[in-house]
Figure: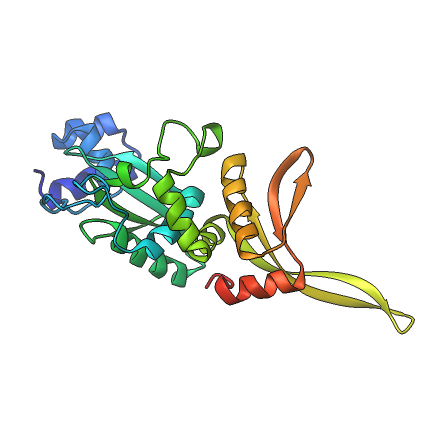
Length: 258
């Protein structure tokens, strides 16, 4: 266990342009330790044998299924899982600084789903990573795997499908909060012989993964939201919700980021 002074000294050396090898030689800390301190400076709390609903004897859904559905959407959009220490993993959800309300909501969902009930925040350039350590992220998010999400198959387990079916709007909100937005579009039309500007709200969801886009649109279908695919060049990465009634539904259950 390295003290805080050693940790800060190593990070200062790295910030000054020293390599991990150089900082390791100067402080006596391993390169992997220094790399982990870049995500979390404070020592991890002692890991308790916290029960997990998924790997327990009953293999149940997480206790707060609404929070899980929302966090699943966030994870599929802007989340990742990486190895930690002592057989655990870090879950990281990237949230733009522009949306402090989203950061708070994300942290609350992470803490509701994490068996330990903990999360932390790491400031980066223009965004905050909501970070949580657990030995159970891989059983809670079995979509984790090597490589980028859009380069591998993304399929929900039956128990996840049941949660999304029970909480579709939370799942949609998580996807919009990660890889979507609500904007105001405009066009012009003739009114009384004069061309006038006309503005209307619209939701967009953009993701390279065909599987994740289909999860999004299948869930929209189930709640009665009409959508279209907008293609840029040959890439059908954008899902648009623009019809008035559908936008009204989205405003009721999702709303703009804040």
